[in-house]
Length: 534
Image 1 (cartoon, rainbow, N blue to C red):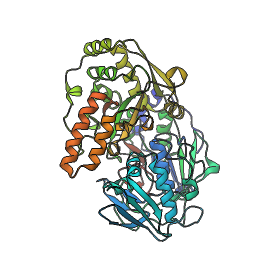
Image 2 (image 1 turned 30 degrees about the vertical axis):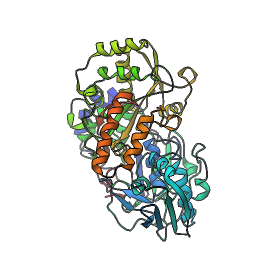
Image 3 (image 1 turned 90 degrees about the horizontal axis):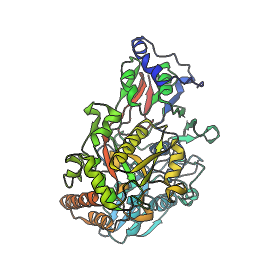
Image 4 (image 1 turned 180 degrees about the vertical axis):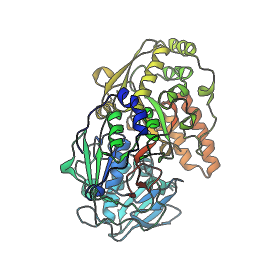
């Protein structure tokens, strides 16, 4: 794709009526072009290893390159992917899995049980479900080339949900030699098990990542084509991920036909693109996105829970959502607590902290009582992510009005991700607060919710230490039935509002935009698989 001019946002919007009214026909593709899908992801693929970050761009990249043992559909039901099936014995303490015959890695080697065992062990160290599974595992071993078993000290009913989860972090199956690399180190070479091969020679960080169809890929034989379940089909010989950080440039390229698909449309360009007859604006992601402001629990002022609680009266979720979605209430939802609205664990427990009268004066009083009024708050701001940056600036304004000296540490997305991992004080390159967003699918229960872990230095960035939350999480796994889980879920929500591991900002829905003529067959996540042209 040729280098594109960078029009100003004002110029693009100003010409919206003319562009929308032009009866443009879809560009004529050459035979070679027709075999290429040109896609703009939500962010640059900043790293290659999906166990080193919860970035959704990296997660989606990984779903192209690797497979999981099971996939999850939009109803959160697991379906076999690399696994053919499993048998449970010994009072739910022994799980024996069998791999499908046929799948190979991109170097042509068969995917073996020893690869699955090594991959699960690596994944266990990072994932919230995996860490719990590891604590309950007595032994995991390969029985032969296609079978492996997990022997448990105590039952783990969430086994298939854990091994098949689509996000944060999926259990991707890698060759044993790569799975032996510590997640803290990160792999830099990809030998995948998925439908596309990563073309390392063509990668330019901050510009392009290229994937080529793996002709020997063996898709799952059945299951619904939904989220990560069902047959994964690469219909294009070549997939180009083009990172264009300026939304105006991306919108112009999509309209001119130089791009095929923009994963997440900038909110202020949505209406313009909807008026185009040659473009489809489509809500593919069904779980929505939940925005959160995460404090760093290691350093002042947010190491003090009283300071964290002081911000509740100042937090107006509607203001945050309107900053990116305007007044269209079909595109966002408030109030939102710690669990995804509508999920089994969501309740009204403690929600008055969000639904009661908003009062900046009350927030200032509570903050003054802590002795931390005027404390400096360094807030990470990825300027090349429109939604993240807009919500970050609203958060900074809120903290200032509540009496904190909040400031933006502005950078690009990749630099922000690197700084977010630093545990040093803000004056030494660390941070105090960061906006984060997770899909609703990641926040439905305490087993997999990344930001509800309270295991200190092993917790998700921000590193809260909460023995109460950790014990309740274990109790949730032990609950005998759904009613017991819901009861514990209410208690977790009560503790959440007391300890404030983060502030929820609301749930919003994003759309993709793609050239008319593309058929997007996979729903739930905007992963460019099962896509055809014409």
